[in-house]
Image (cartoon, rainbow, N blue to C red; front, side):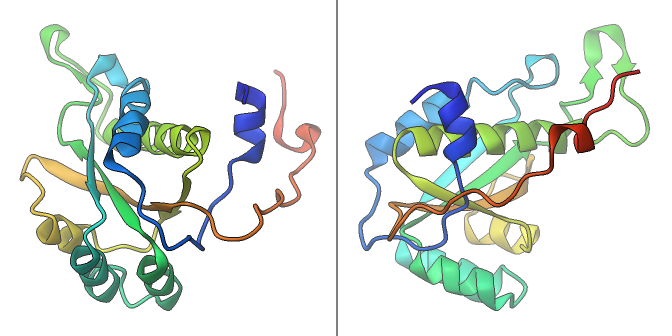
Length: 181
């Protein structure tokens, strides 16, 4: 699979086979994900991976704000990746006393890059993913005993896709999203 195919074919997957993804494959996915760019190469992204059914059920019942769609997907998932980031590193270059500004959101930006890289890496290994936005970051951190210097950025369910791979939704024409000045 080349880069163009990877970008065009990756979809959010919400239905999974009743088969866990081997830890060696998950390690390969994180190995690829660690190449995601970050502010001043701070490499703030961290990955907590679980296929423990009790932890997944606790996340489903306690950490998706009662959103039934996410609860259902989690109960079907064979694994969950909790993407977190080390707080206070992105957006700063200490040695030069450089700060990106009051609204520093580079840590979240870096986590977003890492999240997409993780999902693309998973797709390249035949593993489907879906990123959840309706989550309780503090409850997730508590459930997985996340170190206090980290903050949860995203919850990514993963597994081997059940059924036919979805086709892409209609995309806007390039002239609707591009402008040159």
